[in-house]
Length: 301
Image (cartoon, rainbow, N blue to C red; front, side, top):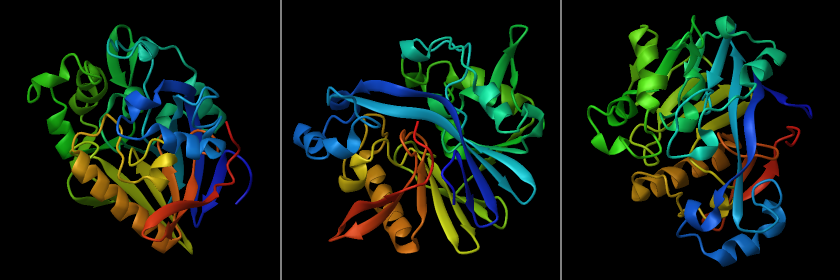
């Protein structure tokens, strides 16, 4: 491994592609059941990458993990996206960001992408699935297959779930999911799905009904592309605490503990969707709980 935006895991090259990073929301709103003293206890580790200097505002990144595996170009999660109407989140409304420029600087054009993995279908994981061309939402990656969990595809469809209107995912299915499906580029999957000899998708429900993770096993390296299993490093030490966006809190806690346990036993690198700073870490079991063993040698934001 080398200190850069790119790391090598077995036969897979992994590159971090930034959309944006910085403050997102107050800690007591994002994690309503995490006590204030827990943030203070771990302040030195959290500030400034994961918590603001004020000690009360959570910082995160919107980013994509770009994988090159078995000759294919694969994107895991696609951020918030440009030009999209997001009435529930003013900071994400009608963005104009250079995400595709960042992808190009990593040597990837939209037409080069073979596979897009949406670990789940929240607003900040599907945004660059599409882009606006002459007033029409079209797939950003015209040659890609988009892997989407069937459970989330059904849950976030407003035809099945009227509560989507007025929530954080308002408009998301219509502008970032349905156009790709209409183009015939979506493959829905359940339970698990083998991507290639190095990569496998597994269901990890709780945060959303269809939330998933990608496990990597290549050579002597293992990794967990964790999606929204966690949003802050504090959840490593406090795995029973959820974000306010977890649909099934009990299931989210169970899934988090199970996957942290697997990562600790496998010495797997954990690459969450939203960690700023070094963006990825190794976890270890510690007296029935978990701790951070090391941060990845990825250059900090």
